Image (cartoon, rainbow, N blue to C red; front, side, top):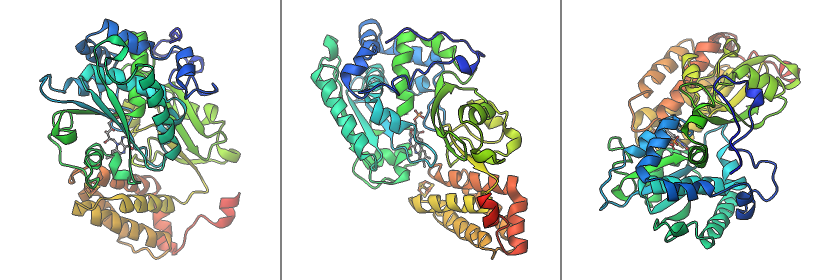
Length: 441
Ligand SMILES: Cc1cc2nc3c(=O)[nH]c(=O)nc-3n(C[C@H](O)[C@H](O)[C@H](O)COP(=O)(O)O)c2cc1C
Ligand code: SF4
């Protein structure tokens, strides 16, 4: 590892040096030799030589690291739920399913910096006493699967994976398991069902996976980016991690910036950078200088924010206060040429297609939501449609086995709340008010 970049809460984001994406422009970044040339695996050495597993759990708790997979659950706290009973096998499952529309950050770690992820997984496995770790990877990531498998082979040959890792007595195997293209397999219990060889159907919680997970045994499930943060926390310490970001949302974050901006892409900044700075400075401003109409801040499951929320800091608390969720920090920026009914319908179709069908509110709700939004968009909407949609959304939230149903309802409610007039215009005028000429402007 190189020296820790110095930082401090409240420091201008412009002075921030990438931590997680530090090898972005380095050729051969996916190889063990290049990773080691940049200090890779010294955190694993340090963890195995200097820390007891419980100390690592405390360290990660102290750092304030929160899950980067969507829900923002504190990582160290999750690890601490793993029972200490030595007779029980424990597992780590890395969630590399990355299917949330808007999110493309995990793919970077998988394809370009797989050893950063593996190092994080090995330290986490040691902390929770897991001797088997799985990477559940999105089926479409064929190249990523090959890169990861090569990286695992290289690490195994170097004594970093397998028996008696670095002479420490700790054993750990890592396997890659490919999904088959279902979004629901990113939901943690759906992922476990799929890993066990069954249909990727979510299970009721509790029991939570930390108590009864893979094959009924204690299992930690963490997102790729969450695990990639771990080596840096071990190397530089909890205080260093806390010096980045805000008081409650600590650390660096990879932002996926997509849609109508001049420079879409992956950017790493401290949590708390404002939406305005990310769009106007980092992203080079709105595409063609056109006015902003709305931003989905955290991936498709999060509520769209209108332009008056542009000064919202992008951290877990502030985005929630603004009426949405930071989620995976995957921003979809939309300018005035976007028909918000069409955007809502598009998302509803996604959720309808991806619902596993176990719960009626979700199976029927997502299907009818897509149908009603389609008819409004086509100019065949009925006066009562908006009330019907809002009633449906209400009954789809908090009533199902997993959060997919809520994830479908939340965006629809937000589109209606912020762009209700546009929905009404579609219904009253019997057509989409965003003309093709306007779209070209
Ligand atoms: C429908 C659905 C899809 C999800 N897809 C993903 C995914 O692709 N990747 C991911 O890391 N988390 C996904 N999650 C969140 C996981 O259930 C889980 O919270 C996360 O993997 C935990 O890791 P973290 O604590 O490190 O964020 C999804 C959740 C839901 C409800
Ligand atoms: S909420 Fe939807 S996706 Fe989740 S278990 Fe129920 S039917 Fe399946």
